[in-house]
Image (cartoon, rainbow, N blue to C red; front, side, top):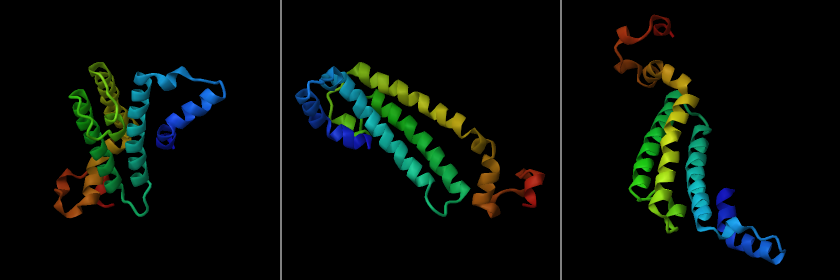
Length: 150
């Protein structure tokens, strides 16, 4: 939805101007860059959400998706700080300055911690989840006794 609104930004601006309700932010380049960043990160989060809600998924697969996304966040932060928005196609279309990239890097740096906090229970049970994923490759002595029979 946000991507569609972004794609129609020129038309929205023209319509509002015709109605006499001009919004100055629509002409501000920095605001547009911020919106482009928001569009891209929202697309990534929506894709993760769709994968997590997929049918017939096991907990270990969902756990892997979350861990993988946290790693991607760190990669994206590094790329943004190096002014290489390879995974941010909407932002890539904007001429952004170094301070803006640093600001976006700061935003991305916070997200892995937010994920760790949000999905802290999964991390707490990471060992049983890994046992569930490959039960025959784990040392039985490493499994807590209350889970061994399950």
